[in-house]
Image (cartoon, rainbow, N blue to C red; front, side, top):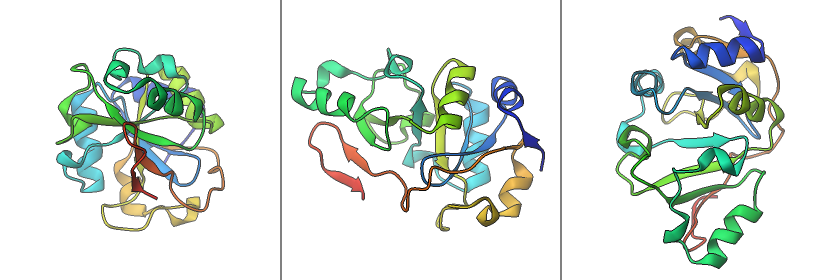
Length: 186
């Protein structure tokens, strides 16, 4: 499994690659969310059905411009979401028509986070747009908090792994519904 510098990881992503990288809590696996072939490959690697949808991370709120329908949220809920970023807070927000079905899955919303993890943030900046961020494990298996916990079979199918470490959180980021605050994953 090739170890990738930030520059090489970003180049692989731009070419339609699938890359393993550290996030706030666990190792993630990601690709360009607008490259359907890459997303379907990532889902096949994870053995995850497309109808579940995937999380998008970004380096800034602006990277979500045109993807989040802020007008579908009450102003105070939109402010709560914005105030939680950057940070380890993932929100299911109303999606615009620009969010592909292979990202939303069977949902009208899209799960998004403006990450504070330096490497994940730098990958989004280098790619120039949000990045798919799902845990780097086979569906139904525990997430990898440490690099040594990454599944070798999964790594063999990815295009490389970024050099780095997770942010040290003890659980994956919570996912909440932006409109209500309801916790989907605690």
